[in-house]
Length: 93
Figure 1 (spheres, helix red, strand yellow):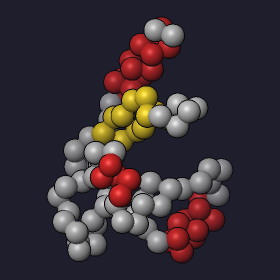
Figure 2 (figure 1 turned 60 degrees about the horizontal axis):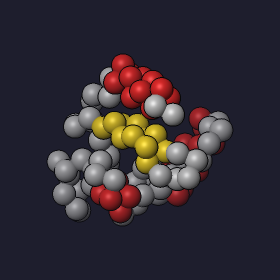
Figure 3 (figure 1 turned 135 degrees about the vertical axis):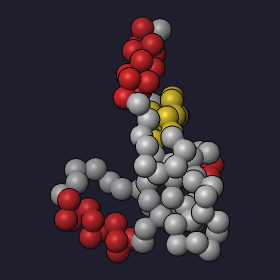
Figure 4 (figure 1 turned 90 degrees about the horizontal axis):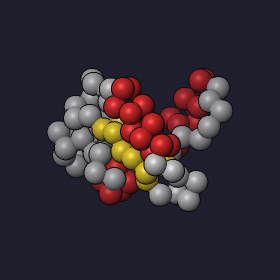
């Protein structure tokens, strides 16, 4: 999910030959609603709307099953945490 314009998204998608769509959130509505917007950047700043790095696990019904986000922009959620949650979810049904 990105706050970039459609033009930038289309160019990036073409260059990277992605096999999945990119989500645009130009006004930061979605990252704010999901609670993953990086609050270091206020509205009007060029980086406003950038999310914290993370992973959303979305079920086939469109509901968020798990959310992993890390404050800042350099770190990433530990893979071990994501794997443990997935394993726990699969064991519980």
